[in-house]
Image (cartoon, rainbow, N blue to C red; front, side, top):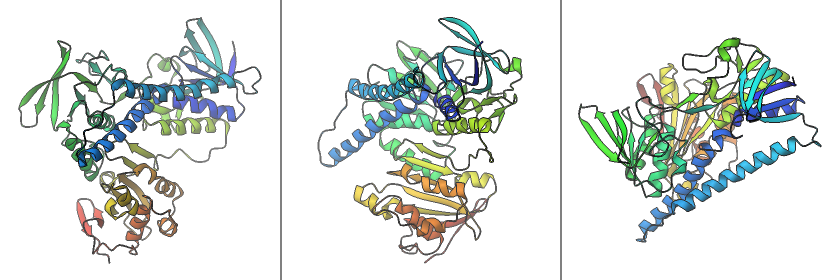
Length: 495
């Protein structure tokens, strides 16, 4: 039986990060993956969808300009779009493949092995690996579980990944669907609604049980995204409950029940289920060796460590925020706990996220709604993109920055929301300040590049300090600063 210092089960972004970090510590590592290394981060997930979003955004912006000048719109043939997505996947796949191959060459000083197969825990130190070559058992001092997740399905809806699909099938279409219904108005559902409506070849329907899309986000963010989806021709079934969805004569028929009690039956060509993901924790032998799971099948963990001390859980299977960057951080933290000198617990307070919508949405920390739920008194400052020179230069003045701070003299930053062009480039400094617990004065005194979108952050902070260049008393519609305690909102009178 071959022995390793660390066995990593799952070769997605979390598992890969764990294996590479363990190599840094000089450990002997085996990475076990039953499918393709890279996971959903490369295939049928982040990379594929974001490549498609980039293309759709460029096309949409070009056609908006052509429309203003009375020129006919431009179209991208599906084959060309799919080829571009496949090229992006190939480039990333090659990086992983070359990296793995070189790490395992005989001349390499790294003690690393990649094994393809299905892993199952026999004990806290023994792992059985089954592949086409047969079954073998290895042992490891420590084990990282990074088995990821899969799209959630509904028991009474038959998913064939051709007519009724999840994210595993949507990128394998042979052509643009003439019409598409998306069940679920969270991030992924709204992203695909954005992409297909941008491309201009598909009539999109979006089913939303809540009274508005993106129910976890603040209303002002959701309203702007919703307005643009509607302007792009998307039909949003708000406060609607899906009664049934089935394939009939090669098409999808669905029935929805509205809040007022009326029902509606609609036929479309394709359907996409976007109702979250479930962890891949079955079949690992967890219960037999004492690794506890939650009632939703996530692995119980404390700062990445499971209920069996030498076994760690990271990424989607741990039940925290299902993001590539967060999974990688969790994985690195777990390995550093094993072999390093970690003094602090992993923090989720300054996670930077992007929603690939129109316009782009970026966030870090808490939003207003979350602060209200936790009973935190806050001050909020909002600056419209129309006040930012770079946005004016780009002719992209739709959007705003919103920074949330504690309602006290310290004004500690709790979170930020940015919606608009280059939004994702604007939140990193806020994330750093949250982590370092630095005062907002640091941002006010920085020399930001000009013209740039991030100058808007500086002006937000100056507004809180009552020393902004533009005065809220003059630009009341574009600059807003207020105090909020529970449902009570009080405008702050500034110069």
